[in-house]
Image (cartoon, rainbow, N blue to C red; front, top):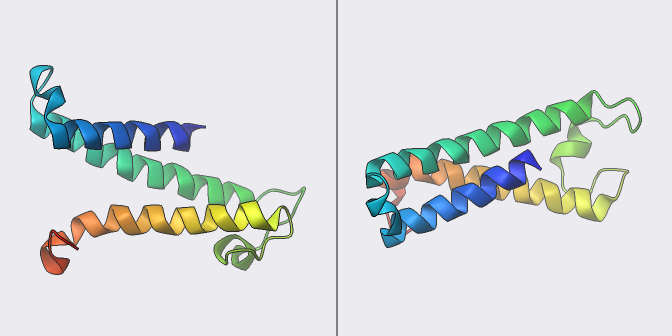
Length: 106
């Protein structure tokens, strides 16, 4: 729930920064920094979730089961979609930091 809330807040902040709607409340640089922070915090919370699953004694996940989509023994479809979502979240977050090399449009 924490990761979903952070990602929801991150998307809302991104839209607010893009449209300039939040400029009346506080400066754009502050909302932009908060947007970056919530993205990194969401990745951190997702990482803690994956690490916590490694220590789950009920299902006994292995690292490959958690990192390879659809390899988990428990609800493999939904777990696989979660792994893909994790990779996409990390990719989008990391792309911000290499945007000078890959270009703004990319």
